[in-house]
Each structure stands twice: as structure tokens, then as C-alpha cells.
Image (tube, rainbow, N blue to C red; front, side):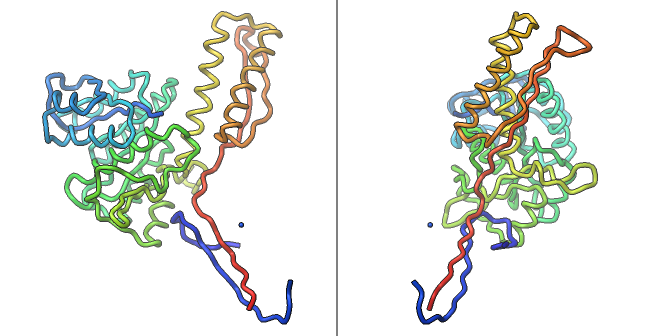
Length: 345
């Protein structure tokens, strides 16, 4: 039974009635690339306090404001690369790729080509075992249809496209606030829908249910102002297709966040414990036991809901390689509650 055809998170209900006679419920570090001026243009500048941003980029500047929103909403620290224009973004993204502790990257550009370059940079860093996602703003004044078109042109589980951006400067501010909130949530399985955003109270957007449907299904993460509180409606990635086929596998942001939590945890655990081990049956059994320990920890914390088929073997073609295989099921966030009330009159 479908209680609603809409995608907006919430508590939904229905009822029926009948007449009868009788009857008897840690924050992550964020990388930021934005237009600004400083003494070290194009280099990574570590920022951990707002005062440091003011000293580096000036008081009242757009770049300093983005840093403020990141820190205010939960980022543990910010790695900033200031650029002068569109031509500088690619080099700035490359500079952030070398950073080991960056978990999220955000940029201020609404240019699609720049955002696609950031997508490729984030994917490359993740392939190099520096897993991360990025958050980008919608283009200036884009409506729902244009935002969906933008997300489809990016189409990556590692890219979050935010809305709205109806006024000058709002797009990057929304993206920074969302990135900060994601960075501040230590449990990757908790959905970001409903998370309040600080410092963007002047965002006046409010979407209809039909508009939310289009945005969510189109890979756009919307924020809206309800009762003076600006919050994320539902956090999704821009990945809506595999090839030309529609695919919702990576739609929820929690999915990629859980993957980026589980895989590096297992990898780092094995690296620290088996740095100089022999590829023997005894070592492989110990490796399997350690993988199970890490997966059990994720299971107990409800980051995953199950795991199976943990196997460790020596690679037939190369006896110096140990192949570790396992499967797991990600925990799903609670986006909607459906109430079905049966009333007796």
C-alpha cells in the first residue's frame, strides 16, 4: 500500500470508517574552493577558526562568509584554496586532491563545467583511497527543471547539487551550509533530511510537494524555510542513472556515506595490523577475524544491517596478494512514516 506518491519526508496518514454493532503504536574537514584574495593564492590554507578566515581573506568578504557557514554548521576545519576566476578551479581541485583528511569539498562556482571538473577530481581522490563527496550550488536563478537538468549532467553519487539559488550569493551559501551540516554528522547512516542549517535564515524558498518530487527524483538536494527555520528537505546525490537507465541505487546520500565509512575502516584496520605479515593460512585467518570484528562494530552501531560471505584467500596468480571479499547491507534512513488509522463508529 502506498500511503503517498510524494517524496517529501514526513508523517503520512489515512483512515477508513465502518459502522458495526459490537466489537471488542565528529565532524569532518571540508575543502573549499572559492573566488577571493589572499597572500597565498592557489595554495591550500588551513582554517580552524573564523578569526583565521578574517585574517586571511578579509572581513565581510564572500569567501570569509562561506568559511563561517562551514564552521557554524559543523565542519571541524576548512582547507581553503582561493581562486581568481574560472580558469583557476581545476588547479585548485588538484591541490585539494593531495590533502589526506578532507572528507567533503564545496565550491562557489555555478558553472557546469567547473562542477564537472570537481566531480572528476573527487572521483579521482576517492579512487586513490581518499574518499570524499562534494557539494555544489545550483546556477543563478535556475528553476526546478533547470536544476534537475544540471544534476543529470553531473550524475555522480559523490556530488550533491543544492537548491535554491534565487538571489545573488544564495547558491554558494546554501551549498556551504549543507556541506557543513554533512561534515558535522558523525553517523553516516542518519539521513540529513530535516537537519537545520545555521546562518542562512534569509533564504525564503518553499517548495510544493510536486516540486520536491521532481527535485528528489532528479538528484537535487533542496533546502527550504519553514517557520523561520531553514533545513534540508531530503539529502540526495545527483546519481540518477547508470548509462541511460534510471537507477535509484545511489540516490540517498547515506548510501555513499556508509560505503565511505565501512570500506576505509576495514582497509585502515588491516593496514595497521598486517603491515609486515606473511601470506599464510594463519595470517589469512587473522585477517578474516579482524574484518568480522570491524563489520560487527558497524552492525552494532546500525550503520549496516547485515554482512555475509567474508572470505580471505591467496590470489592464485600472485601468492603475495591476499584477496579479502565480503558483502554488507547499508542501513536505510527513515524518510517517511505512514499512519493508517481504522476508525470504528
